[in-house]
Image (cartoon, rainbow, N blue to C red):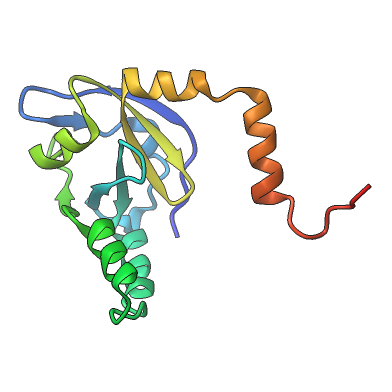
Length: 154
């Protein structure tokens, strides 16, 4: 699995392409290739997975029973609009119009590392999200997610 760190700003051109930042490129192993999957994120953003990271996710999803309606709904939403993309000779990635519209991407974007993927946000929306996330909210969330059952009750 390829793991990413960092936060990078980029700009979309008139055709909906952005230059993959050098800081991200440096984190890609030589055998990663130039293929990526762009998909809808859980929030109003996009996710960019190296194909090498996307394939194991699809393998896990293929194990989900399609006999439950909520499973089918999740599988549809998770894969809806997912597109295979490739860096062009200049190192640019094209964001399809339907995905660009979903995330409300205009011109200025932020690429945010989230372990095995990169989230692509409209810069203004990302700033709003980040500013609304207080240290207290972060601390509470960390306790709920990472606290586990080994926490001591007073």
